[in-house]
Amino acid sequence: MNETSYRLSQLEAMNSRLKSDENMYKMILNTSRNALLYHCFPENRTVHLGNWSHFFGSDCSGNTDLHSTLDYIEEDERIRVYDCMVLEKTKKESNIIDFKLKDRNLWVELEVNVIYDDNGEPVEKVLRFKDTTKFKEQNDELAYLAYYDTYTGLYNRNYFIIKLREMMKKAERENCVVSILFIDVDNFRRINDGMGMLMGDELVQQIGERFRDFSSDNILVSHFNSDIFCMAIYDPCGSRSVENVISNLKTKLLDSFILSNGKEVTITVSIGVAEYPECTKDALELINCAEIVMFKAKHSQKNGVQYYDSPIIQEFIDKINIEHKLEKALREQGFFMCYQPQYSTEDKKLRGVEALVRWKDEDGKVISPATFIPVAEKNGSILQLGDWILEKSISDFSKWLNRYHFNDITLAINISALQFKNKDFVKTLVQVLKRYDMPPSMIELEITESVFIDDMNDVIEKMNILKDMGFRFSMDDFGTGFSSLSYLRRLPIDTLKIDKSFIDSVVTDNSTRTIAETIVDMGKKLGFNTIAEGVEEKVQFDILKDIGCDNIQGYYMGKPMVSEKIEELLSGCK
Ligand code: C2E
Ligand code: CA
Ligand code: CA
Image 1 (cartoon, rainbow, N blue to C red):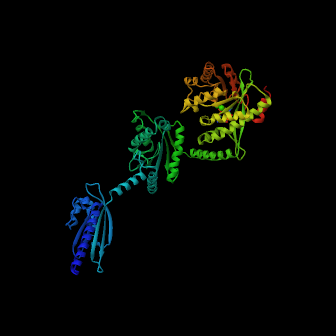
Image 2 (spheres, rainbow, N blue to C red):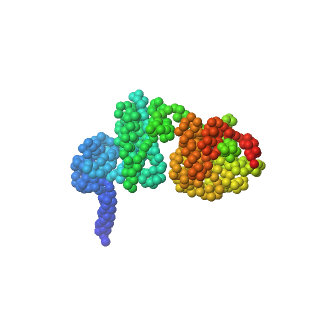
Image 3 (tube, rainbow, N blue to C red):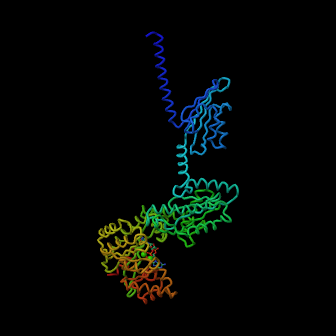
């Protein structure tokens, strides 16, 4: 092979390599979601590469005039896009813009790069159109998740706070008021537990739909979580006065909700209202204030609405302080027991003692259980405290029993609903009794009707187990709860404890006397013992004796007393 033909064959080989490389790049570009345009200014040569038809319907090759692509772009975007395409006119080197293609759900990123010579004349230019639709959608979705609640489509808590801060800033400039409505669905847990979480979610979604109608430039509506909604009203007056909005809100909730399982649910809500700047100038604190007063609304009868009121907030702060101190007292044994005697009405013989817990705080002040038991029940520390009470009262009582060998005297112990329902309750109780060698028949467990809320059957089953072991049961505060005769019959109760509120007016009010008499009669018919609590005067005692109440407990016969004092009483009973 001579030199020339050798070179020729080398050139041919190179050519075919180049051709195949070119094909490869073309293929890569054509199948990508990019369209590129290369333009050489001195040669006035334009090359189209990549997937032009993906964006502009045709491959545009041979079309050096970019004007035709503008047909695909929204009219009000055209100038911006065209300016970017002819970037050399501005002498800029690069630019990136985003735009959407007309009639097509396609987002495009256009990047333009221009190279200039030393005189500032454009030499080469590359335009790159990139399909960013997927990215944009993901971004929008992320933004949506960041700002909106997926169940209801309302603002979520974080975004609400951002918008509320903006609203408060505006209110400060314009000297206006912003009102917060903290809205909580009543008994939502029961609905959720009863029908399952899915139906609960569906209900929340439907509530959200009804609340959405309130949303406007001046009213922000949000779903915080679970059954909690929050609204912010800018300059609440006229049709958007707080009263008006609440009234409309309640009207909207009048119609029942139909769920996909065919069930019909009616709901009510409790609302706490707090106002900027009266309460606070801080958005989070403002929401907090509305939340705190909402709790008050839940427990009051005022149509479920409570306006901000500083004593309520103070009460809340006190409660937090109690919670804090309670934890400390639990660690440092700050409690002691008192015992109040119970007597038989007939012969005034001691029939039992009720164990009542006391708390001596750091300053030596004795705090009433009426103050701290509800707090301990709410935060769960009643479990630990309840165990301590069982241990202490049973050990005290067994000591006295061993010393004085009395008969037929019971130790009544108050058991909170949470404590009774705790799965370890029976085990703990039995263990303590064993430790002090006490017969269960000497223990009367005082429970209130609140223990039956939610899971009556489980509670009755547990009561029966304890009853079979020999424990006695007393229904405390009887007459204040949902006391219905039909459910009483199902309970393995020994004693009905008539609430103090009846005893208070048994002398002055005939109808109360009739009720007390009815309770005693009914108790007798059902085979229960009766005891009246809070008997302070002889006249009360006489009436109770007259109507046949078996036992009494109260200041008239004996106040709650410390161990040494009750021991003196017990020492006289054989
Ligand atoms: P309760 O079980 O209804 O207890 C009776 C309350 O009435 C006691 O208040 C007692 O001191 C008071 N009392 C008794 N007789 C009279 C009277 O003649 N006049 C007046 N004005 N009051 C009388 P206390 O000891 O302050 O207890 C309040 C509540 O705290 C109790 O109500 C009970 O619900 C709860 N509690 C007390 N000790 C315990 C406990 O050891 N465990 C649990 N779980 N709760 C307890
Ligand atoms: Ca009691
Ligand atoms: Ca009571």
